[in-house]
Amino acid sequence: MANNSKAKTTQPQQPPKTYLINSVQLTDIMRYLMSKPYAEVVKLMNMLATLNQLDPKIGADFVKKESVETNAKK
Image (cartoon, rainbow, N blue to C red; front, side, top):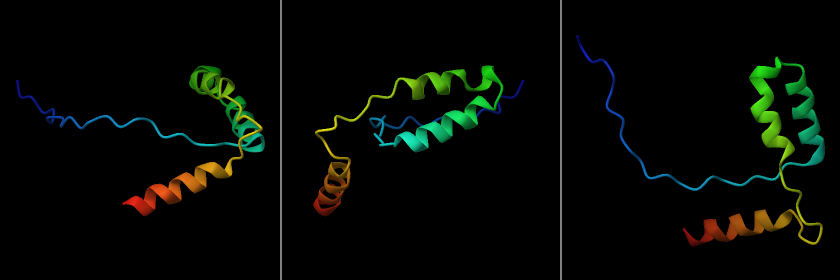
């Protein structure tokens, strides 16, 4: 019996990226997912429902400033 599976190369795992999403985008995504079969989207909807709200004292623009500094260092 031939083994047709390709050897997987192991790559070092990078930490997950963090994104900001506003409430309008979140609502649009949830509305779209609610139109799909429950079993297909329940896990995604639960993940979206547990997103943490950004502290109002911190502006979302800090992400842009941080990424510019990171790119400048490269």
